Amino acid sequence: MDKPQESVSKNSSGVSRAGFRAPAFLNGLFNFLVEFLISSQDVIGIDIGSSYIKILQLHKKSKKYVVRKCITRALPQVAKDNNAEKRKLAQEFVKEFIAETRSKSTLGRFVISGKGVFIFSLSVPYLNKKDLRGAVGIELKKRLPFQLDINNVVFDYFVTGQFRDEKSSGLQITCIAADRQAIDEQVQLLKDMNIRPVAINTIPDCLGNLLPYCFDNLSNKKTTTLLDIGANISLLNFYKGRTLVFSREIPIGGEHITHAMAKPINSPNGPMNISLEEAEKLKRNIGIPLQDEANVEFLTDFGPLKGDQLSGLLRPTLERMVMEINRTIVYYIKTFKSENLIDEIYLTGGSSKLRNIDKFLLYNLEGVQKVVPLNIIKAVRGWGETGVMKQELMMEQAIPHLAVAFGLCLGSGGKINLLPAKEKLEQKAILLSTALRIGFPLILLLSLVFYGLNYGNALKYKILINNLESEINRLELSASQIREYALMKGKLEQRKQLLVMAKGKQPYWWGLLKELSHITPAEAIIQKITTVPGKVPQELRIAGKIFAKYSLVDLELSQFVLVLSDSPYFSHVEMVSSKNDMYSPIPAADFEIVCQLNY
Image (tube, rainbow, N blue to C red; front, side):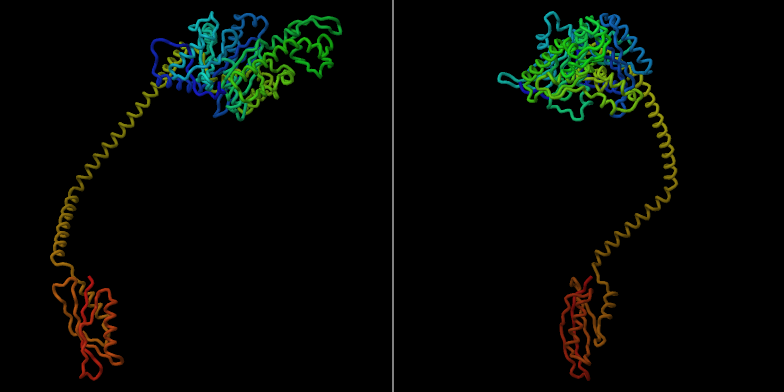
């Protein structure tokens, strides 16, 4: 198989349902409206573990989250072994939580774990979305215990990547399934608490939903390994980005370490039998003595005890845990062909607070270079300042327990939702009733406002029309006079154009003669001006006499011709004739000039 890639699709949860199926568009619309309605409210996250009950409510401000209230309560020993007592305590804690927060929201998300929950990594061929669920159901049926009927299972899944080998190729699927009876019990428990369930999820997917808030740059190519150490079991989860790729349950938790310490031991006062309560106290106060603490004496209720005495009690349990973790890492690398080595492990869960657990795992796990608690408190501080956040010491103690609850409350709460189909239909019905309850009065109000605006506009336009009609009647006489004037003006313009067409274009005689008087030199006397009829453009013949008292007559005539050529009224100026007057006392000549008129 190829390296699994980032999740590329997600299917709706719930078992396959026969009968009527709503169109995909309506399903998508309903899901969007449900998510929008839920995201606008402060959802309560409830995590009922085997030793602690954790309840959390966040309030979203812009893109940040603020802790409204959180409760972590340890279960008494009698409640750990009695489900009825545990349910009773859980109901009391939730009612106390709601009373203290004075929250109006009754929406809740619940996490289910332990017996009856199965997480598988499946390989299926490439199929469309409609047929993919059936193929996942077939593969799931092969993996489930034979005594468990597939029809009594609720499952959801998401695609984590693709695989390709020599024989086949297809999709890599992470499928999470749970016993329907266990789901129904948890749904009924929430309803008994007056909490309306909107999602049921599992621990690995909730922690994956939390990861983006704990890392600045969460890579989709690098594998993030998370070890959730609970009371009775531990979960080793592998993620690509926030997408769960593989999860394995390790049957060792904090309770096993407590039972490992509840054994006879030699003390300064002689052999002593350590009870479970005393062993729990030792575990919390001392933790895991390391090799360099073998000769260190720890003060206990039994007197000073050396580290090697306590580590000897814990060694079989811890070595088994290390062996299971190493086996799981090797299996993941070989099965999913991970190109990156698993060199970092992050810890969550209540038992991750155990002293030196991180150092012990770092020293004993093969190839691991870093083992640290998941830095949830850093993300919490970035979400805002509240009264809860000011109690930083309390939060640092409680935050490992609350990791799953945080994952439930952030965003959509995870990629899957194991809520039964019946409950989802009830959610849609409640959504419709809420929309009708809120939308119908709103639509009625908007309709009344729209009618009122239209009625007001109609009255305004009616008044305006009446005013315009009165004004039109008043201006009718003036308008008729204007029309008559326009008609007369049009006729005059038409006659003017006809006159111009009949007469033709004429020179501007007044300006022409004035120009000629200005440019004619004093030595020249114009005796006759004639035009040649029928020529277009018209020609002008100028006849006269010119005198040259101080210069040549021809020179004076040439200058006169040049002056005529430069005038805008004349063009193509030519000398027709020039005859000297032999009887004149001063040089003189008779001339005739012809030129075209510019008009």
